[in-house]
Length: 123
Image 1 (cartoon, helix red, strand yellow):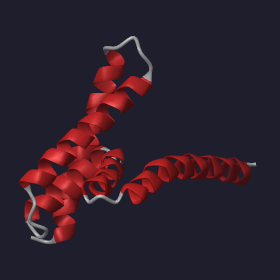
Image 2: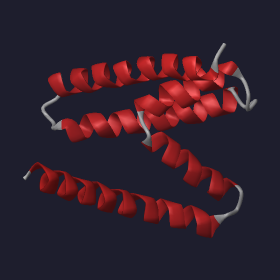
Image 3: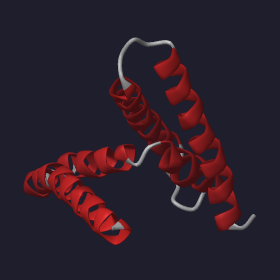
């Protein structure tokens, strides 16, 4: 089966599950949406770790559906966590710390820059 089709299938499932869980948590919690995002991101990290161990062969069709498509659309934070963890596991402590520190800072900075640019374009 076409890799893009497999990724698309997994993406539809992951994005819809994320939306359903986020809506459920927000409707049944007195907390704000930060709790739902935290729970979804942590769950995504757990699922990515589990699936990475179970589907370890690089070209398995199931990897395209579940790891790239499903987990990728469920949460991108899990991918970031996996990257940092892999560097730690390979003894690449400096690289792990660089990614672990720089990526959130740069990501927040780029998000802010995008918001500023978007607001500028709207006015």
